[in-house]
Length: 283
Image (cartoon, rainbow, N blue to C red; front, side, top):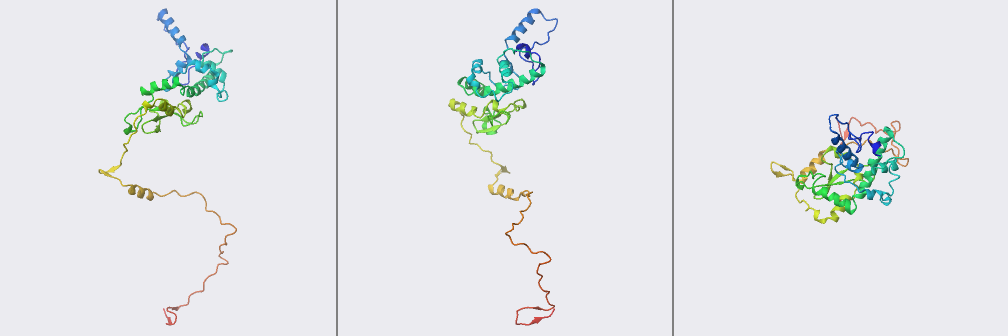
């Protein structure tokens, strides 16, 4: 796969791990050889995790990927599964791929690695790697003021791919937020799953921070706003009119009289009686 991965650049604008960059003619041959050797030693997994925007990922052990049991159920979820798996493991394809095929396989390899990654980080070795990143605050810090810069953990809102993007979970306020940097906001949340932060904190209870008891209190001129004021303000907000047409009366309901059949009371005389027996008072 090394010769094929050098034919196209990654969707993020990064060259593939075995793509040889153009060399200046003035460079010494020794420098060229050292550069080529370093390029050849870079695996696809290391290259993928080093891309800008992929800082949340950890490197999955190849032994874990080579175990078919760990990949159960992924065959039907990832297109071009065999080609994608060969690319991740740096296995050369039986037949060369053109540029269009290369791009399709690279996209499938990214998806396959992400789904494998979601399973790997729940293992003992995977959790250990994520703990190192968590302690170094590589996933960012909680944006809530009263959490005082608490490090966060990546989490998905669904375990199904292409459903939601990755979010970050704060163990201090138990809420989720968008990542700080835009380059992390396009990562599929299924590549981290819904279990990671809770399993990690259960496995490493010493990392659980003390819950924040501070709550922001709105004030006007230093005085707290009473709850009744907020409720009164909300009551004044007009509710949107329903676009649903009124229900038509059923056949069992009494029909309303039509203008032609409506009974009209007789016209009042010029004299109106008040008090019955007291007579008629003329206008």
